[in-house]
Length: 397
Image (cartoon, rainbow, N blue to C red):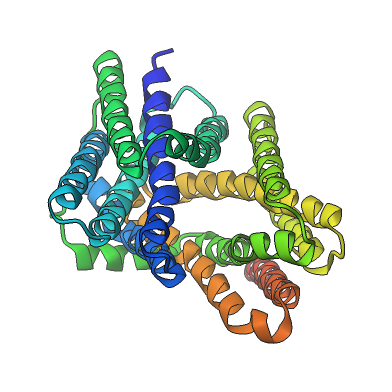
């Protein structure tokens, strides 16, 4: 029960973030009727989140992650209120775009701070179980965020939704404050070095190069995010376009994907599985699911592939985060994890770009299948490389 405040803070913060992600492109489209501007808003919302990961990770090595998490949540509360005030006095969509970008960076800082807090506080609990439970809370917020935003928009204007988002960020910070008062965790700086961004990035690069299995897992995560990225970029077009399903049926598809994720995470939380089993199983299922979505000729078969990708992406995420905790030295955890997360996620916008460039010429499912084949080839090359290194090491010994 002592950690209920931590989980509550995570849920409220993530819920507010998901509502904002849903709201900003929608409101900009409603205000301007310009699809391009709406897409640009989503780009501005998401790009700073990825770019900020290395720097936010570095900060968690030099400053208390508890303080960084609290300040990131309170700063998001202030940023949303300032954007509302700015829009009231000087109406314009730039306020919405700006707050989306600022909140995105602060959200990344909060995510990196939580990543650093987990192994410090939950020492008495199996780490895979901790990750499964935190991702379960995260997934619940991701499902409820757009639903709550749509519900509030039905009864009130979008400004009211922004006020609601600000209050959620403030509530998340209050929940964290209450939890910190009850747990009273201590944090000790693990390095005596001074904060230097360039040196920290250089250290992170050296860790990626030298630490066992870390580079191989980055390649696998890059491949996984290719599959996830192409799914996110094409699922609406394929399900409602190619298969002529309604918006309601598309919403059901999303809910079934979320339900699969919850079932997988609950299983991981209860079962004790070796990391290798988690990684290999999730990667294989993701690849098979991607092939099914690329080859399917019916909505039902596509649904199966979709559920496999969405559900087992979280299993791979648990594997990835568990391995990082085992391999990366504690004093370098933030800086190295931040850079690793950035490299892992570069393939998602790349997948979207490939869809934009080639879907019109070759067909959307051909692009999906091609991207999945590339991901499978990356996995095969990583496997062959690991086998080669093992054979060489045995010969040397």
